[in-house]
Length: 100
Image (cartoon, rainbow, N blue to C red):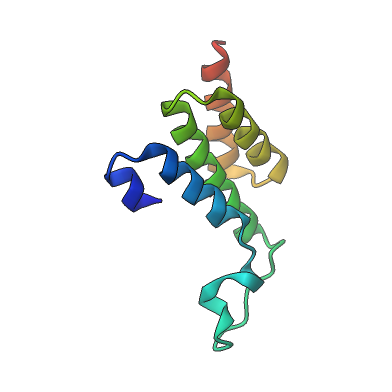
């Protein structure tokens, strides 16, 4: 995602972050070699990581004027229950983007 973003290919960058969030640890290439056990997909760290990726994708979707997809991604962040800074930022952006 970062590479596409650096090249100004915002839509592709957003999609890459969405795909990265969709890949659960047991299917991640980093763990397929068997050297390391994948983390629990439901761990707070993994939930926060996925929520961070969705949030980044939502911000990029906002930049390319895709409010429907942006709002869907924000809802995922909020429903994930990541808490902390990620959830707080999602709530701030939701209010900002709704014009409140």
